Amino acid sequence: MNEEQRSIKPDQPAVYRIEVQGALDLSWDETFGKLHIEHRLDAHGAVVTILTGEVPDQAALAGVLSLTYSLGMPLLSVKYLR
Image (cartoon, rainbow, N blue to C red; front, side, top):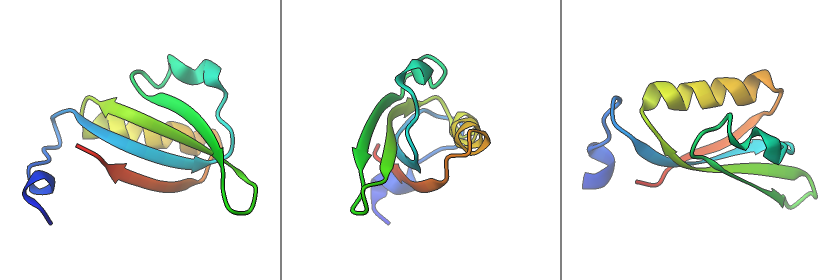
């Protein structure tokens, strides 16, 4: 683990890249706050939604993940960027 990863605090903002299976409509942009929504096709031709941006804290990250789960979008990955 590098120094930057060790400095993550649960109550501070951080930038993440979240990938979920399925196409999240761009109209959800405001619901997900500062997260940018984009789509791509995976190797099998399935649509993947990518949410990238800053979340205020770990509780907000959990909220984003919970919302995608409630929409029936399986989680593929979560990556801490900074």
